[in-house]
Length: 275
DNA sequence: AGCCTATGCGAAC
DNA sequence: TTCGCCTAGGCTG
Image: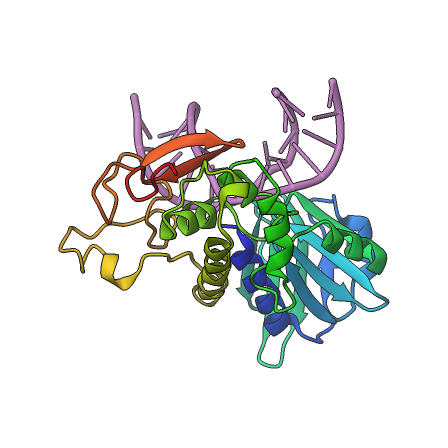
């Protein structure tokens, strides 16, 4: 479930579980074996996240850079006895803790590489501001958006414009501001952008806290609207994401879908009218 | 059991 | 522009 909130949550979890403990690193699958051997036995120094990129820092300014892609996953477990690896485990970490022992398995990532400080800096340099980072400058994203003829629904997904937003947050923040996803970036007002950024900061922080994406305001929950409760298969409560042909939670118009930059985009044609 | 889809990218062509 | 990654959950049959 990897949008930015998932990665920041993983950075926090790694720090809590493995902080300062000597770590055993291995690569049962083999593809990260050489790097794992270099780090084996060393403690985790710090963790960092920028957009959908996770960094695990070890001594000597060495960083394990992980990108989960579409279906990479971390699995955490407790106990000293490590399970037989399930599937292709790219990276396995394990440590004895004050209370027992903990381990984590990484499967299916797009990227798992060992980087130097300079290489890590280069990753940051090609990413836009991340609503989950306190140092983020929303003005940098605004300058890209306001000069572009591309649809705002495409720009929100470009990680060098804005880091961490994926297909769910894109659809949901556009709905919450009544913005047509096809609106060219240059037509978006500064006021709307400032509002969307502030909203993403709140929504994504909540996503980190809860470990899922919830975007429906209390007054629009099915309960508040006097409708049948429903269940979203990705765990959270959303307005339009993956709700094709379902009635809009606010106006009951069927939610529409179309492919935009290779991903399915969802929106309500009534609540998000063409400008 | 097999098929399809997917909250995403990077590399190859 | 297309393919690879090779996981995981939901659906079909």
